[in-house]
Amino acid sequence: MVDDAKLDRVVAEARRQRDERERGYREQALKLYPWVCGRCAREFTRANLHELTVHHRNHDHDHNPPDGSNWELLCLYCHDNEHARALEQREKVQASTGRGASATHQPFAALGDLLKKS
Image (cartoon, rainbow, N blue to C red; front, side):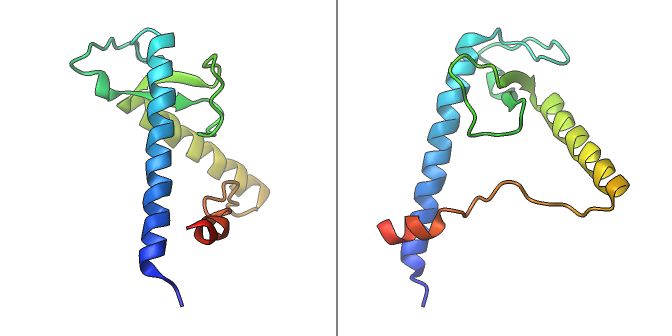
């Protein structure tokens, strides 16, 4: 039987950790790079900085080298466009090879261990 309260605590903790990790690399990226979109060159100020996002070049949100080499700052629109283009490219490759989509990220890989700890 699943303990819903325990599962809720584990999920809440995982979300808190993700948010904390994201805040950390975003703050680092904003210190390293000028507040300009790397694609459309739109400039940002403190007033609209929330519209500037950190894009992971290799699409791995856990790969955050301190030198920022896996990051680029993109506005919301260019960031969405970048992910849409990557998705289209992946679908083209899958169609040409006859292979279906395959997941590479396993977000619940350590869920069992987390549930045991709580």
